[in-house]
Image 1: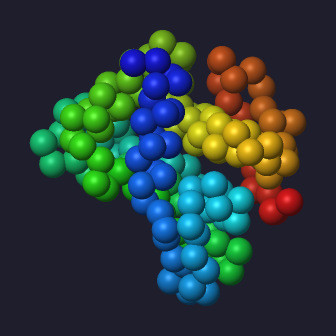
Image 2: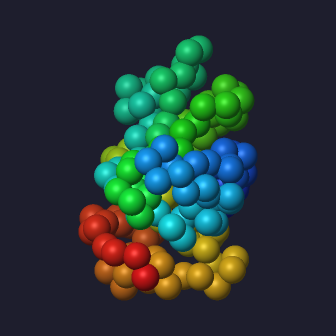
Length: 153
């Protein structure tokens, strides 16, 4: 599996998680694009099974990424509902890539999060919401920089 294929699989899964509603302000995010434009990523994405070194879990703990709604509530996108075989493929790809790139799982997932955002938003020329990241990162092919918190554009 290539990086482009892995990212495409993740985007396809996440697109299937919408519409999604903020439990606090009731704002509805109709699409993944809408979600990315109106939330701010927080913390680091976590693939629990990858962190545990279990690349073929029979009962996956799963993966999660969290973003804050404009009202301040945290909203999660998870791997729930993904085919276990597809999830295994992604875990194996991620494990291989951490070794090949000399990254920790946390660093790889952080990089993948921003590549997904870049792809989803670039398709619609809405990169301004992530330009602060582009201006601050080192060479992507080696190690991404630590992502800082920033406001919405």
